[in-house]
Image (cartoon, rainbow, N blue to C red; front, side, top):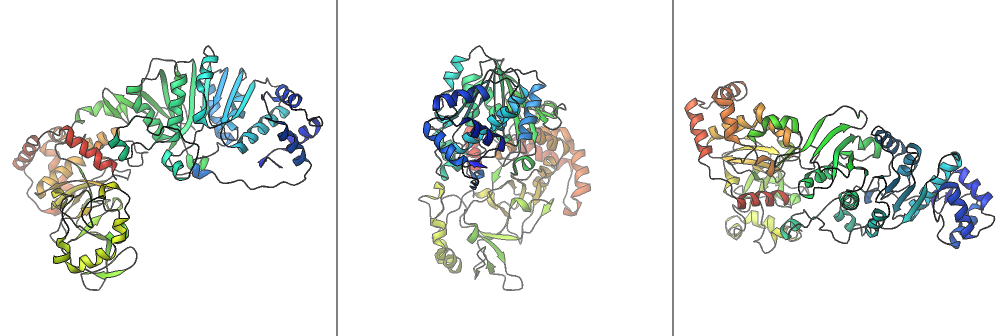
Length: 601
């Protein structure tokens, strides 16, 4: 049956029918507190009257809205039970339990079942229907388990960002606290786009500077904000902290431990199948830590379904943040600064008109765009382009798509297109509204048809490239197509070369076992973009070259690249390594630029 638009059991219906004959607010609330522990079950007399009215209606069916777009994935009872069973193995006996976003109350039910010494429970929830569902579920639990000890339970209908955790912290300073739950799996920008009121007042809670805010670092997960609220208020209390959250949130918390130094240790993440548990395609885990400890910057990784087997350790190795501390400790000598600057591919934000395919069997100058419009343009500015999904083979010299490269450097005047390439100009200008409607500020006050992520490096004949999105660290070798360099889109990274042999040497180094193992030790493959410019700039090509020596290079070439038919010899290898030594050191401005290009993607 539905009451206040939420499900309640027959047992709860029968309970109310028997006990609401006298509908005095104080007496009813007192009865309910004695029976199930909930303080102030009803806020006012009208709620009791409404409930009596509803109970007299035999059918009351109301559909419940889908709140998944708000990151609202209600925790299945089996998962909250599994979490509490794990916590039991750590000999946790909380006196105070806090559930910051209690939803329908499954975590509260689970802690009631698994921790008998609880004195008080705080459940906070912004959505009124979930508040009622939680109350009814708790009442149903104690109807069935009337002999169980009843802690005082407060289910509070409030925006979590307006809730005063400091008051709980002060009142229960000497108590053993467990903070547990499943905060929303959504970012602040997503909630803003949905006009949600459930947002923190200050979005830049990590105090990013203006540049970082522009490039997207000001966007953050609501779960991370809530987790840091908890740590700010309770990290110095005796107790424990356990949240179901995206792996990216856990990674950020551990990453920031170097500067935050929260008094937490025994940091652990227990991966689980979010697709199975929540029908959502993301990587997620149970984040756990012990409060009021000497701060730690290392997190042990397990599987929630097999929680005794340690998989990895992630965290800080001196001043480096890595995904696998064990393997990294054996390879950290190769973590430095890459002597070659990694670049991202071209960014245009106009894929429907800038990504083209050739029309088979027709004039070589005829193309079709993603709107299925056919047209003819000059080939002068048309280049092969590869996307992340195209970088799956070793050597590439052709593509399935083409693009129009309107500039050779950022901000270059494009007036020449109208005079020199009239067909190209006519096509581009007919789509001017697509260019004008691009949202990114990088195109403001720039010439017509401007693109980004372009420079002399874009036109190097030979390139070594990798996808930023795929969970593979295999690099591809790009050769020119019809004597024109192959371009990449901004989901890819590359180094450009004038000499094929230098590109080959670099390709061999990057695909060598040492480099592959090093990358696997520092890359978080559950990130949205696992491979970034920052990651690639950490590869010390020269140190790896010294380690593998020419013998390893020659063996790799003979087994996988012999079809190139170029001269590979030890003297050429020595000259290549000299070129790496002579590269200027990357200064802070260069590193700033790499971050900028990465964040703009």
